[in-house]
Image (cartoon, rainbow, N blue to C red; front, side, top):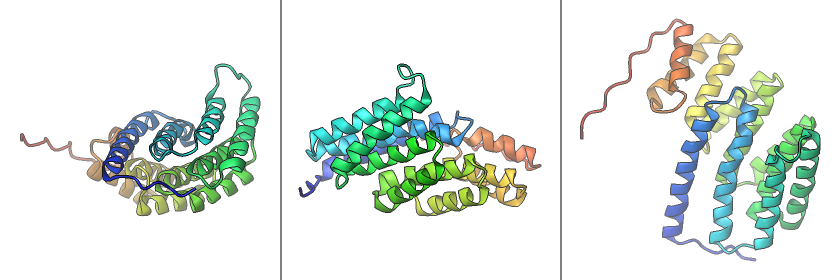
Length: 238
């Protein structure tokens, strides 16, 4: 089925939704100790955007329902106490959605959840392969989230250089919060004793994204590295 062309008003609304959810994601992610934990919460951003797209373009309602079922299972820590069971059920539901609707946007999102369920079940090799497929197939909204998740998996498993490469590509190419990526890059460089690169990216957070939730963490890190940062400039009255 041909994709319905979106009006200028619909595109403007989608951009506003994307911007608002991106800011929300930054605030939530800034409080996470591990990137991989933040990735689970970033799911809210992806689903809201894609769900809105599906609704606005009158896509198949069954596809959206199936995807919603997979998401609900993936996040259902209240009723499914075993992580293994939860990931197994989410994987099965996401795989069904992907098999039935792989040509639709929800199919790409389902593939993202397949990857995250595979990682949850300890099959990191498959998770990486699946995320790489999502990055190749997905549009800008899901590609950036998949890249960020991939970097988080590499970081989680101690593959620092691979994580740095993924984050640098994402930082240069766009598609995700640059403040979040810069902060992650700085942390990775610091952890691998590359102080100059760490300072560079912490400074980017301070100078380029002074209002981001990562500002305080970057200030603290720079002090730890022996760099004194000036206080944020006061905004001029309008």
